Image (cartoon, rainbow, N blue to C red):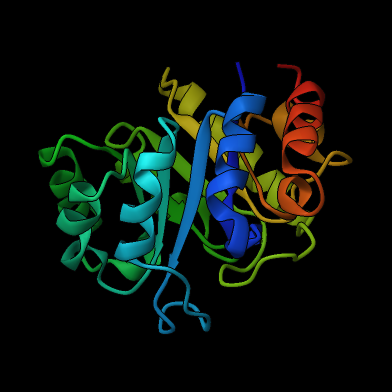
Length: 217
């Protein structure tokens, strides 16, 4: 089954708690939480206090995407406040394996992410070391962008790399995913779909329900 990870970067923050309940009740499995530091990406988003405060609103899997430099510094804190999956960027870590080991040592699932221009070959040492690979389908740092078409081929490449090693590692995609293009992404091998604007712009519960049906769930 494909997994919908609803990105709160696009949520209405004055109604955030209710919107989380809405997407949860619609059947979305993950809550995607983008953490930005203003250095690895230009924007700054929410940090530990926000994540800690919304943890009690839902039992959904907290899918935390660290868009921060030197992510190993903060892994322990994000684990403590309720993250279930902690994904960091290969480009932001001096020693990706050390970050993976730290995440696993805290009992959490590890994900590794690459930006659109990063070659998929950098993932080769980590294919069997992580639970999830995130292929960014837009440049990280801003919501509401259009999917970069070339990234679909990158997803296909990653799935082939995994298949060649008989691995069932999840492939997540993030950026510009909507009803019109989600099946094209799933068909090339992605199974964890991040959707922000497509879910939270309008009626979040109705949008999430519709999106899940489009995904074949």
